[in-house]
Every structure is written in structure tokens, then in C-alpha cells.
Image (cartoon, rainbow, N blue to C red; front, side):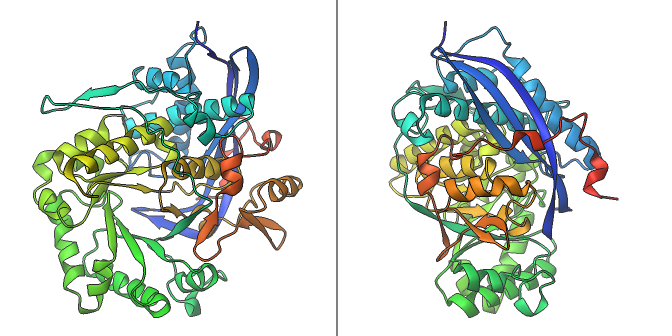
Length: 476
């Protein structure tokens, strides 16, 4: 019998509201439920609990547009709840990686064949189990990966469409640091200039001045000259504050049907006289194509030539363990890390990036850290633990920008957060808010505590899915 068994698993929800709208793709986020799961496990004879959390956003996991937001929430909850049923309560596992691979091979827990949604449900179980084992042993994620408690060095292999076999073990080199740079999201309706901001301090200019930001992620939407004009204003703002010293990623959010369509827009950006320095500072292009076409070679003309100069990564198309290695065969040169898509899958992809760069003799392949608008004290912390261990230099963060810190939680839990994670949060008008100093956030308490979170989350203030009411979001 293996060392790890699941004894109990449950889901709860709590409504949350943004302080400024987040526009991405074809949707605007102003309110959403925050989901939290609690798992009880037995690990090497000890019983412990662990937690995982995330927001349930509209039109990200499911972008077909046919389902209402209420239905999308139901589908996200269903895949979270049904994930545990995929492996059976009578099974045991050697370690959390063993369980994660069993989930990967168990099929889909979603109402439809949506690989990204399925990976989300599996990641919620995976993350909560990692947290439970960390709490059981009394050690951090990074320590237990390095010690071989959370995983082992088994080789994981996949056969690609070409017949080639790609294999690697999960990344197990401890690259933790005491801080990480924030890559600030500029959503499609974010105010650029301070003079225009409707909510104090939320414009790009204010954020740069307050937090001393150096990295940015800019949303584009296949709107031709409208996108170009907005990028011109964003670049003007950034360079007025920072000069030439900054880095950017461009997020296509699946808004293009083929790569040549994206190239038309990017050529317009490159040809804009004021954007020459901006283009020199582009770190990577993120998921320009819809996932329907992103891994279809007939829609990828020009990709290989483009990635000889600038990395193009998958994000929403990274739904399975083999997605990135298959995408690399088609010409993509990177993928994203998001804890919501899978922790061990991210570690596997991190090793693939390393192996490919060693094979080609440079850093052509990249992994970027991206954000699902995650906020503390569970989701944000787990994601930071993951990118810290993998040694990423910067990570997209936007939950702190669109939400007002932890104000979705009852005030009585604030003191515990501020005490245990005083390096990560500051009291802002009575609410714990992410502390960004000189463009970076501290990872010290993240690196020391379980799967990043050093407190017991306030479980009792969340509602069961049956108790929670969609109408509390106040959406039409």
C-alpha cells in the first residue's frame, strides 16, 4: 500500500468583487466566486488537512461563449468536485506526484471535453494534497520537493504526433530566492494615465510610481489600429516613467485564428515609429491563437521563423502533460506556469525548457509565470511557492490590482495573515494588501510555510455550492 490516501474532499465558495474592472479577451471581470477546497489525507500514518483556492472567472477555462457565466461556474465546481472520484477513495499512492500522474491518466472530470477545465479541477485536488503533506511533515514545498517527499525522479514520457518520444523528470533543483519581480497586467480597459483613473491608484502610471514596476503584461485583442494606438499610449506611459529599461509580454488571449493574422497586427506595432524600443523589450508573445487552432499546423504559417527572434508561448492550450512538448514540435518556444493548470505539470515543463535549451545551446525556450487573478492567502501563496522553486525571475501578478487585497474575507482573519506573512502584506486602510517594493515582492515567508500559506484559511466563512447564490455577485 502507498503512503498517501485521500480521506475527505470538499468545496466551498465566497463572493468577491473587483475594485476596478478587468477586461481580457471578450469579457470583463467585476465579480466572481472565490473557491476553496479542503482535503483530508493520511500520509505515512498521519492525518492532516490541506487547502487549495482560486477564483472562478468567466470565459477563461471555457471560451466557447455558448454557456452563461452561471453555467460556467457550475461546470468549474463540478470538475473540482468530481476530480476526486476519478481515482477512487480506496486507492493509495506513493507520493503526490504519483497521485497527479494517476489523475492525468484517469480521463476527464468535465461536462465536456475541455482539457484546460479538466486540468483546473485536477490541480485543485493536487494543490490541496501538496499542502496537506507539507503541513503533515511540517516543512515547505521547496524543502519537500528537494527531499523527494512530494515527488520522485521517475522519467515521464509522451509520444508526439511525429512519432518521436519526449521525456523528462519533474524539475527538482531548488532555485528559490528571497524575492521575485512583479510583471504588472495592463488589462484592456485599465486606465493608463493617472489623471484619468476612476479608482485612486489603479492607473498604469500610478502603479509604476507607487510600486516601481519594471515588467508588464499587455493585453491585445485583434483590433488592428485600436490595439496599436493603445500600445503606443502604454509604451509612452512606461517610457515616460522608466526610460528604456523595462520588459513586456504581449498576451493575445486566443483572439487570433491563425498566426499570420497575429503577424499582421504585430507588423503594425513594429512599424509604429514610437514603438521601436518597445518591440526591443518584448520578452515573449503569449497564446495569440484560439486553442481550437493553436496546435493545428495548418494555422501556424510563419511561427517558426518568428520564434527564431521572439518566443511565442502557449497558455490556455497547455491543458495536458504533453501539450507543451507537442507545441514545441510545431514551433512554439515556451509555455506558462500557472498553478491552476497543474503543479507537477509545470515542474515537468520547466525541466523540458531546461533540456531543450541545453540541446540548442542558448535560451531560445522560455517559461513565464502567469496569473489567474489569484489572491491570498491560499491561491497566491501556492503559485508563488511554485515559481520561486523553479527560479523564475518575474511573474505576472494582477489579483492585488483588480481586487482590494483580502477585503473579500472577514476582518477577523486579517491579523493572522499580517502576522504570519508580514513580509508579503501591508495594512492598507485596514485591509491586508500585497506589498510591492522596488518592483518586487518578498518570498521569504512563502518559502518557509507549507505550500506557501502559514495560516489555517477561514473555512467557515465560505459556503457550500448549494448554499452559495449566484445573485450575490450582482451581475445582470
